[in-house]
Length: 281
Image (cartoon, rainbow, N blue to C red):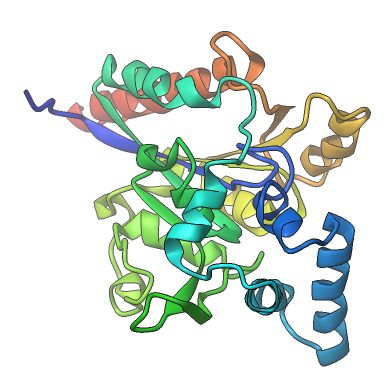
């Protein structure tokens, strides 16, 4: 049975530090190449600084180099296998079904998206991959033998914003730049900005959080609840008018995040009902 929804809300998440503690490469890939986390990231970032390159591209280059030097598989399936070892924050597994049901009871369709500088192939291997309408993240090009040899998509903190516009206009292809640049009146777009909720954990998410907030949507900065002083550090984002809310990355039923997102859904719902009443006059 298909349900008729009144409209759609997009919940857009960063991945590392937002749905999962730490960086996804640190659970399996970096230990497998025999490096410490610090060694790997220092080498990638030093390469970027030395050659005045993008840090996302240099970490992807280092992944290919390190895997080759250690004889590790560079197939998509090997990266997906890495994703099976990624740990998630408390309540994440059950979060999507609960929020979807909450929206559905109000006649609202909730769509979930990833917007991450992490690796799409690793995210595809996690147990929550099927929950997302689209995963926008870094990915590799693969040769005829299915071996990664070059970056296909590199997502850094500024070009992350392009995916917000793609969601806004209902353009799911990364390749398609024509449709996303076509003029569509705001009220005719599949997901207006005011019906977006962006969830991120820090610096790389600031342009997206600010964009969504400035266009009338809602942005939430989350922090690791086990990290001392993390909330105080995040408070400056509210002070600088970059985000609407700050809360712990605990997605359990009844937790602060759960209450906050449901309240935002209620607000978007009531705003729509009010608009309908005003349109009748």
